[in-house]
Length: 514
Image 1: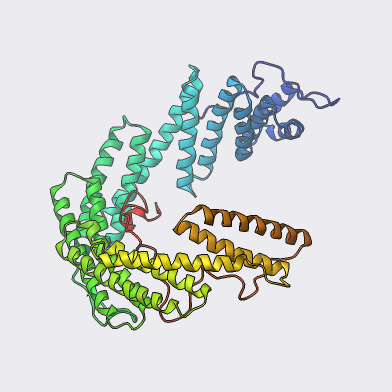
Image 2: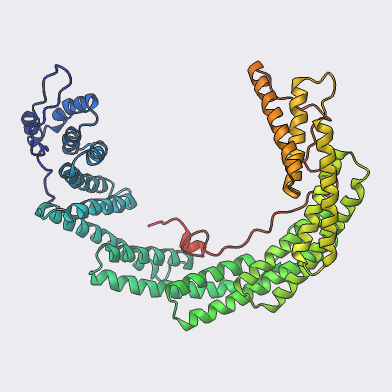
C-alpha cells in the first residue's frame, strides 16, 4: 500500500505562526484534522497564515502537507518548493520527500488520460525520493523510491510491449510499423534507464533496436533508390528532375539505422549507395538550374537561381565529399556566379559617375560588394581584387565628399532638418571609417555624433519627432530600384545534418504518439 503522508511537520519545534497580536496556530489541532480526514478544514487557516508570513519555511511545509492531504497536489508543490528553498537542511529534506509523494499522486490522477504526463511525474517523484535517500538512512524514502520505480517500470514495459506487438502485426502499414517500433524502443530505453538491472528492459531495448534499424534500412533503401521523376515547378526549367526530397528522406532513414546499429555492414552499404544516389540527384538538379539561369533576363533572378544551384550541389558534397560530378558542377556554378557578379559590379561602377553623391555611395557600395563576393568565389582572378580596390578608393572619396557637404549647415535649417542632415553625415563617416580608418575621419565622426546627440536632446525636450526631409540625408542603406536587384551578399544556407534533433529522418523526430 502507498505510504501515508507524514505527520504535519513540526520539524522538531512547536511552530507558532503569528502576526502582530493574532493568536498562534494550534498545530496539534490542525494535525488532528488532517489525521481524521478533514485536511480541507486545516488548509484554510494554514493558507491564511502563509499569506501573512510567506517566507516561513516551516509554515510553508505545514501548508504543503495539508494541501497534499486535501488532494490539492499542485498547491502542495508550490508551498513545498518554497519550503525547500527557504528552509534549513532538515526542512528541505522533508519537503523533497513530500514533493515525491505529490508528484506520484499527480501522475496517478492522469494515468488513463495522459500517460506521458504520468511518466514525467513519476520520474520526478523518483528523483525527489532519490535525493532524500542520499541524505538519510530512513526506510520510508527508500520504500517510496522503490514503490514508484516499480510502478513506472510496469507502465513503461507494458506500453513497450503493446507498441511492439502492434508493429509486428502483418496488416500494419510500414509507416505505422516504424512509428510503433520507435515508440517501443524508446519505452524500453526509458525502462532500462529507470532500472539498469532489469533483464526484461535490457533485452527489449536491444531487440527493438535491431527491429527498428532493419525496418528503417528497408524503407530507407526503397526511398533512396527511387527512380521517380517529378514535374518542374512553374518557375523552373521544363525538365523533369529526380525526386531528391524522397531520396534525402531515405538517406536520413539509413543514417538513423546506422546510428542504431553502427557496425551492421548491410546498413553501411545501403547508406553509402543512398548517399551516392542523393549526390547524383542534387548535382543533376544543380545543372538544371544552371541551364535555367541562361534563359533569365534580370541579374537578380540569375543570382537567385545560381545560388540555388550552389546550395543544391553543396548538399551533394556534404553527403559525398569526393563526388566528382558535384565538385565539377560546383566549380562551374562558382565561375558563373563570379561572372554575373562582376558584370553587375562593372555596370554599377560605370553608372555611378552620373549620379548624385548619395546615389554614388549606394551604387559604389553595391559594386564593391559584388567584386568582393566574386573574388571570394574566384580568388585566382586577380582583376577582381584590382577592381575591388579601385572601387573602394572611389567609394571612400565619395563618402568623404558627402560627409563634408552634410557637415555644412545651410541657412534657415529647422532642428528636424539639422538632425536628419547630421544623421546622414554620421552614417557616411561611419562607413568611411569602416573602409579606411584614419584620425581625421574619427575626429569628424566624434564631432558629428556629439552635435547630433545635442540636437536629439533638444528635440526630445521640445517633444518633437525626428524629421526625415528629402534630399538632406543619404539613404546609404537602401537599395536602388530597378531591374538589377540587390547583391545577394548572404552565403547560401548550409545544410547541417542532425540540426533538427538527435535523429535525421522525420519518422524518428515526429511527435510521439503512444
